[in-house]
Length: 263
Ligand SMILES: Nc1ncnc2c1ncn2[C@@H]1O[C@H](COP(=O)(O)OP(=O)(O)OP(=O)(O)O)[C@@H](O)[C@H]1O
Ligand SMILES: [Mg+2]
Image (cartoon, rainbow, N blue to C red; front, side, top):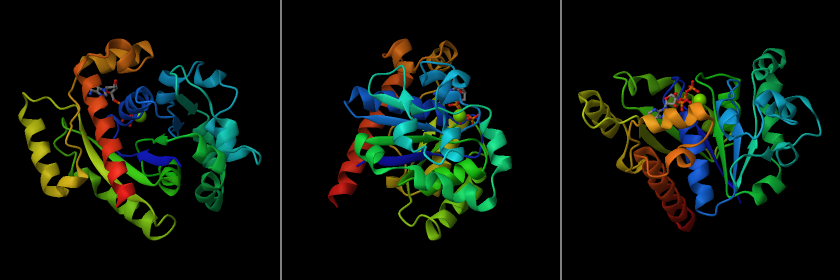
């Protein structure tokens, strides 16, 4: 059965999308079957993973919110990476949010994650937008786990998390009791700067040791370069520092889910 993991942080540009697509590729390289659900109207993961532009995809996440018969297993499309499928998003998703009634906003997606999809994949990674709105809530409602990428470049990175942590706790106590904060992942780490050191210390104070990935993601221009070309960092240069970091995070993730399954 698939582990469903939402990548969430209401701050923009912290590496949510980079983490989703890099880990999807890393897990696929480890022979895992991966589905990425893009719940961000910006459609950044869809643009990088998709074989087609988001606006040209035959099926998108919008179908899940608007069509009765659409479920995850009949809505996903092939990605350009072997072993990774995608439920793409695109800008029109913004309009859907406005037209949905309150109750539909929170109940739609859960009913759409069907058993066949859960059996087909080992991992479902959900990319979310930089706010605490409808799509983040939907991601938290369907997820087993949350990973919070935190960028080691911003001095307010840790204090800005209060709203997200409260939202996770609200969803857990109401709509999704199985939801668990898996780990935080420090991204954009530049060992030479004081900011990275300070954020690392703040994260260590704010979270228990087992709630933080031991591996951190190096700030590395290869990531940006890859994304500009519409490929993952592994496709651009699998020896890049950030590629090696993401592969280690994938291994840590497998290790930690294995041990939580056995306990
Ligand atoms: N480790 C890294 N080193 C250097 N650049 C990175 C790294 N990770 C991500 N980036 C770049 O930083 C920018 C923001 O990353 P990304 O899009 O993953 O953030 P995000 O949290 O998904 O943003 P948003 O909230 O807008 O969706 C992108 O241009 C990306 O290519
Ligand atoms: Mg993003």
